[in-house]
Every structure is written in C-alpha cells, then in structure tokens.
Length: 99
Image (cartoon, rainbow, N blue to C red; front, side, top):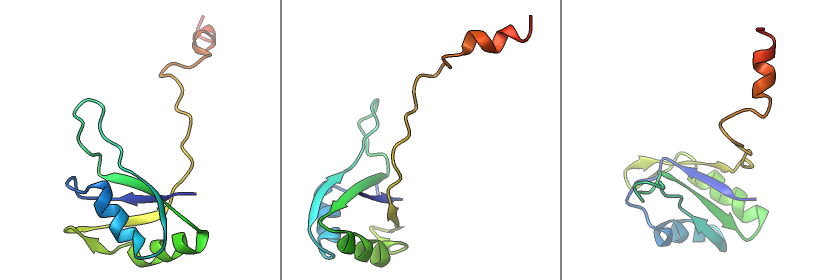
C-alpha cells in the first residue's frame, strides 16, 4: 500500500520527500505526478514504505505537520478508480426512454 501526501509545495522534489519519509523507515518509491500540459507538479505525491509499521509511523507523525510552509495531508492512498471514457457505454439506451 502506498501513502498519499497532499498539499505539497510546487517546489518539492522527489529527494526532498524521500528524505522526510526516510526518518520513519525505508522508502521504496516516491512519485510526484505532474500536469500533462504544463509539466508542473500537481501538489500531491505518493510514497511507498518498506513495512506497514513504518507507513503507520510516517502517517501519524506527518499528517498535519507543517513542511515547506504548508500543512501536509498524509494518509493511506486509496486505490485508483478506473475512470473509463467520458461517454457511457449505454449512451444509446439513455435516449431510448425519450422516444
């Protein structure tokens, strides 16, 4: 499972986030999503820790903590939902009730 880290400064780098979370255990991976069009960081990231205990310690210590001038939002990441396409597969059926 990974940890969601929200309300990050747009100036943060992977190395910065890695260093903060390394205080609570081994960091397996850090991801900082960027905007497709601008390439700018989106203000949140994900961190994977070595064990569940390390993950829990990091969440407890860092949720609500101030870092780089911002109050962090840190919790277990929720599984990504399949967004699918912008059109429903049953689009034709939605019109049939009108006619």
